[in-house]
Length: 403
View (tube, rainbow, N blue to C red):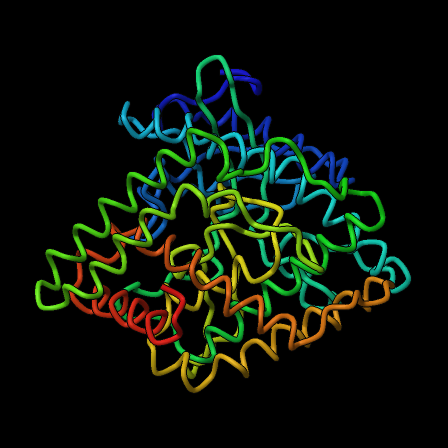
């Protein structure tokens, strides 16, 4: 199989293909040493919580780089074997969006950060040991190769395996705690700030790319509307003693097509993750079990939107109501502080976007955040605690007179 070919199954990922991918990657990074992959250790499927719409497996490529022993931990992400899943992914462009993100957006982000790091003489990677001393590390996994074939609808991503560095995904039913949320909003703030800087400097066009996820597209609008209605019916079945809440969701359902894609231009527009919930965030803890780092994964819904797009979904989907009641204001203040500091580190004046504006946007954006939660009901339905967390989010918006 040649470099340009996209693997159609795990069985056809060969030593020669991995060697060509890694050789090209290290060459583009300025390493002219000879890369030799001697063997692959297939470590099986990537752990739970690491994706529903694709086939994934962990590999270790063992060999040498310019004579130095190398053991590169990899995660291969390929198109699903399920035709229905493939059709869904293809129709909503999830695969091509993620490939474009790693091929176009991440290099632009690295360019922005390396301008900042240039004075200090340090080189920034997407992740890894080099980032420990970076002023603005990028909380995204390193990508060795990303390809998409429009004619077949097949795609492949070859990423670093974050699990090999101690990162893991929290069990969704447990929700995220305060320290994890602080790390998550910090990661979002850094990426939002870097995207703002890249758009301001022209590294990325301010209006975004035509391949970004767009909920106003007919395919996306139809799919989201359908899964929202599926979700609210599941909600009604799970909580038969809550007919008022179910009725409110049905009224919200009537507004879904109008809500999708109707987001107005805000005072600050950034590139958002677009699907920022617990299963798309990986954490690392220290020896005492305290969370110390967060990485964002699964970039299939990248969109240009206000920062509150990511924050509302994250808070409503992945935390319990008690944490939101006690700490939302602090988390938004922390996000705004990191955002401001990072923009300034990028050498730009911060735009007229104060904390009060962010808070107002967040509270209004909770309607769209709840819409996404209900549309993702399959993530909640397997566990009663998850469904109760969803119910609490519905009650919270009812009490705020948003639904």
